[in-house]
Amino acid sequence: MNGLLILVPIALFLGGLGLAAFIWSLKSGQYEDLEGAAERILFDEDEG
Image 1: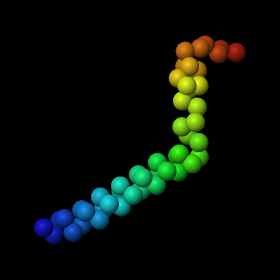
Image 2: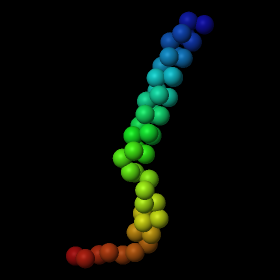
Image 3: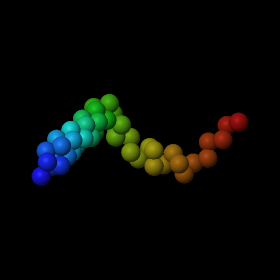
């Protein structure tokens, strides 16, 4: 039972940290061009 008093707050903190990172990635535009990234891998752009 004493272990739960330590593990539950840690789990809540880590969950909140993950949620904050996800919201930050949404606001910074990480998910705006999903089709472009999927198509870019198919084309060979070797300009060297």
